[in-house]
Length: 120
Length: 114
Figure 1 (spheres, rainbow over the protein chains, first blue to last red):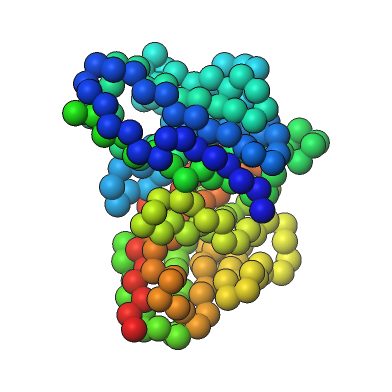
Figure 2: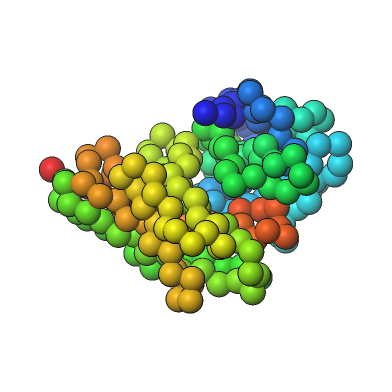
């Protein structure tokens, strides 16, 4: 099946530093990628939708200057948590949509394995 | 606006028994897709099954089946012959055709007892 690689799987950083998380679709081109945040024992909350070559669409309440998303190619999207603080500690997970080739989303989204961010 | 509701925070089932995980949804769209994902403790999201709103047959994938009742707006997941490895969080999700994003329910933690 299709594979989405997310890296790193775990990162610990000091408060005030920036952290970049990569999401790569390994065997398909992803017209759209999504970034989710998940708190312990909670559901996945969509942060933003990114389409290759255009600006990301952020969900209400998500700071776009704090969470920078770049979808530079059809196989790579990055999420940068800028000036991270302890409240940014969370599990971040990306998903990729291969699309249908007819401008519509596919029936299945493929997920990365997630990144556990801990900000000290 | 779309909304997904999973009313069972936790379920405990004996190994080899069947289990039904509830999911109801709310949408004004006629065309939409319903998904179930499994999330083990490792955190990865594993796709289980998909049901399109226009699909006449209930979806099945091995031990997983989806009990789709369109009029009641429910899309329950049925796992037959449960196994210890089925212990995980299970999320129901919906995607409206006009929207790109996938919206998740609150999740149900399933524990299979030996």
